Image (cartoon, rainbow, N blue to C red):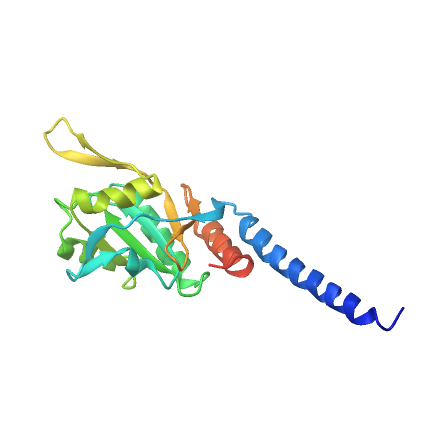
Length: 203
């Protein structure tokens, strides 16, 4: 090889390596194969919203930044889906499959779900779970942004229940939607998926 051309070929080789690394990172972000969910090739921004945490402090999009978040909508009077999902999340969380991840439970029934009720309810599953609540106007942007549904359904006895999306949403450290998980949830499967994300993707 011509000695004059050696530095040129070396630079070209280095550039190729760097390009390969960048391509691998990009492709890796969009190619995480999940058993119980779907990984979004391009994280989707989440709209600003205005809720309160269980201490009465503002809980906005900023509160979801800086760490991965597993977010779930529900209500404390939910007969099956909510307690089952929260129990699964508590079991998965103990295995710490996704370092730094926080679980956030957002009520869709603030009329009955006071901060005190939610604190007791969530505490029965995990002391680390975060609760958030707010009025319809504050919650609507978050529901719409994630494509979630929450509707009040009247019961024959004059009471009501809530129909809602049972999806589990994974947000990245920039509070963007990165993946969605669909029920029914199994602890082993969800834990394995979160381990896979921690190993194969950049949140």
